[in-house]
Amino acid sequence: MSNTRLPGWLSASREFLIPLLALLVLMAVWEASARLFAIPEYLLPSPSRIVEDMAAMGGQQLGEHMVATLRTVLFGFFLSIAVSFPLAVLISSSRLAADAIYPLLVLTQSVPKVAIAPILVVMLGPNEMPRVIVTFLVAFFPLVIAMTTGLLAVPSELIELARSCRASKLQELFRVRLPFSIPFIFSGLKSAIALSVVGAVVGEFVAAERGLGYLITSATAFFKVPVAFGAMLVLALLGIVLFQLIVVAERVFFPWAAAEERR
Amino acid sequence: MIDIKQVGQVFGAVGNGGVRALQGIDLTVKDREIVTLVGPSGCGKSTLLRLVSGLVAPTEGSIFIRDERVTGPRQDTGIVFQAPTLLPWATIVENVMFPSTIMGRADEAARRRAKDLLKVAGIADFAEHRPRQLSGGMQQRAAICRALVHDPDILLMDEPFGALDALTREIMTIELLRIWSNTPKTILFVTHSIPEAVILADRVVVMSPRPGRIAEIIDVDLPRPRDFSLSGHPEFQRCTGRIRDLIFGEQGARFDVEH
Ligand SMILES: Nc1ncnc2c1ncn2[C@@H]1O[C@H](COP(=O)(O)OP(=O)(O)O)[C@@H](O)[C@H]1O
Ligand SMILES: [Mg+2]
Image (cartoon, rainbow over all chains, first blue to last red; front, side):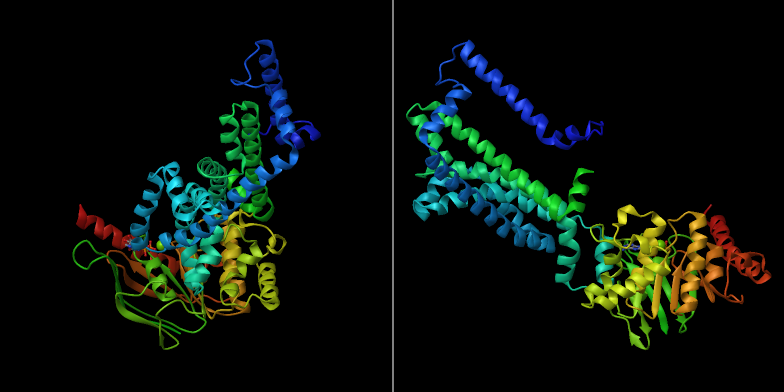
């Protein structure tokens, strides 16, 4: 990161102000070129048209779609955490466990998730479950890898210190290995949340009657391209907000870890 | 206090490709005695200390502390490694309290004791800082406080001042002697500095390499309390001179054999 000095108010809000400004400029150029070159709206609708059509759909309906997708994202995300943590502990605990589990993990990753989704719908029925499972399958892999890497990256001196204090295996895990892995875990969580949004949308493409992914497929089916674009933008916004929540959580709860990562 | 009986250590398979680090070590350290280990690098000083700490089990012979055979790390020993090895996420006082935390005794009394130790070590102002904010010397002081926090009777130190500059090193050595005179402990101290070995020790164990053996044990007959102004003392000169002869004389002899 550069350390160029900016006036107080500007440097404080630089993180938000400059990207926002860039976004506004982009929007303006988009709007202007859409009007100037009379681009047909099924190719590239103008921002004003997108807002208009989204507004016409109504806030409540949009809200319902958003909540549906958010639910799937969060369920999938937390399922990923719940599964990744014990898996990472197991993999990092012994060579044997690592050799047994790694190939299976790679296998789950080599099967295209879009191909699993319809099978899961048949197996689990047309409900939330298959979407959550797809989300989980997309999101958990980088998390397991990041956690395992963190748990194994603990310097042997720290392990030896714990042993010299007669720490049990459990104490070693919770007092040394896990805290040491926090920066790794958070970088894993950041990938996982971004991928959870992808996974939820993939799930909704295959089977859903609500959600932003469903909104995109149903809108394009009726050539309502501005609505599809709108849903896409809302999804992007959702992804950014969730990602930033994790960044903020790390800075608030583990300031030392955030500092470590930025070094 | 510490009885090392016919201890040998081989890393890897004996015979084919194994490294013999120690052979036939016999040493008894008395209660409240300071014994220093010197010798060229690779002669097994760290290995011997790790065996006494219980972190590694000896492949030959056995070690007793208070007539109990050492089978693992014990509560009555404290260890200081060459590097401070502080937990980067914990504050200095939390780091010092780490052994108490592990033993499930991280109470107010432990915190007070940790703070008192930091005061003695002259880094009380940094109690709530993270390790990264401290200099190497201050970090090592914190590591020494950590080794003392559960009030062990035995202190095992592996080149604790090795990474410090010469000046800080002398100050820390005298500091350690001051702490020791207030609360005497049995100390086994590894160093590769000959003056440091002599100024600290009741007895200096000189080791020779390949395989690591005890070459000679030298009694240091210097008055306490000590400081480095004693370097001119004839007894100090005698001890350092003898150690130099043992270490460099042997290396010279080996040099002749090998070439
Ligand atoms: N864990 C280990 N595995 C294999 N060899 C080791 C191990 N620890 C030490 N050694 C070997 O034992 C010898 C003594 O090492 P060490 O005790 O570290 O010596 P010193 O501390 O005197 O420099 C060296 O030859 C070293 O390579
Ligand atoms: Mg060593």
